[in-house]
Image (cartoon, rainbow, N blue to C red; front, top):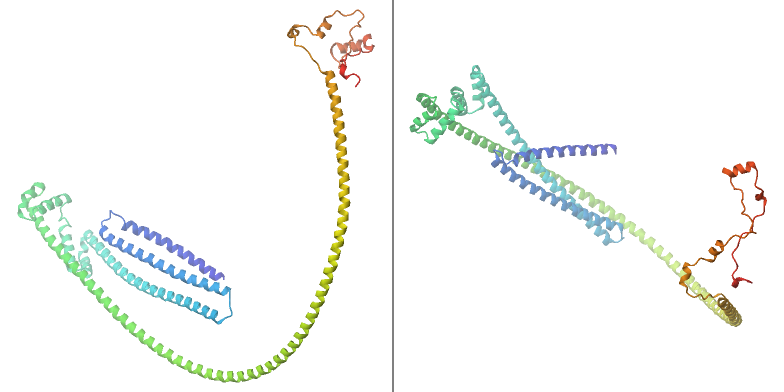
Length: 494
């Protein structure tokens, strides 16, 4: 279990790593393919169209695979639903068998299709790897040739050995062109870039005719006519050798293409041979399998005969056992019929007895019901008389309360008539002194006692000093009675 989990974790890590590498490679690729400022935009546009086509094909294939898997999953779910409700019938078994065969055929077809697809992808991958290796070798040769040329330019003493290296790896015209450049001072014939460009402009304008000489001398102030003629001679030889170089490279490419086609033909021939051998091997395998099948068929036939004999003997013994079983079953059925008759007779008697008991019970219940009705009628009469008596008592109590209430209202009315005040409006009373003010403004009577001075409740101030000197003789006198309000006339005697 742990080993499987470790394998799964390792697989997930590898998948994540490959996914990251793929994202980086696609990023670099898109940077080159979709760069509109690139010098090789025309070639990259072809690759862009090819990539778009392959992307569409991948999406279509993915959709197709998802549909196939969804169909297989739905069939498996249907089979699971059928297995939840199992029926012990031959039709149900045949239906399950048909569903299982359909699912198995779908899975096998899907596996076979994917196997063929993967085989084709492996072949394409192998072809691509071979082509890439060829291109890598070509690039290495180009790098080697360029590095060799640079060494030749930098080290004149090594021209002989480098020349041999170039002769070994490059066509003769290319070697001749490179030697010409080395001998004459590069792709400008020993001139600087400014003079060479002016020369090319005038030479191209006059298409290499001799009439360009005067105009060229005007542009090339520091050059003499002999130098211009010599540079013209060099440039014509340069063009001839460059054209030969292009033709040589073109022939070399055609030769490489022919070699590639020859290799492809050889490869196809070897594949045909391998396929033929594989078919022969398959035929031999089929013959061997056919012989093995015949041998197994003969063994099965012998086993079937032996099985048939054993089955016949078993059937005979089975028939004998079934006859004995039938006899036993007949005796058992007779016994069961006798017992059934006894049971029916007993059941009938029991049923009659139950019906009689039921009738007696119904009669008894009816009598009890009548007795309860009579008792209930007597009780109802007694309850009605009691309720009538209570109702009369309540009515009498209500009448007494009503009489008492009326008497109370009459007494209250008489009292209200006694205390009712009827005063006339006199606005001048607002400016007249009140009775209390008049009593206060009267002169005090000589018989009135002097005012009573009581000591303060709390010490401090003069009171504290007086308490130290001694209490006043008036403090021992009894307090004068406090005036109280007069009782109204209507409340006297109540």
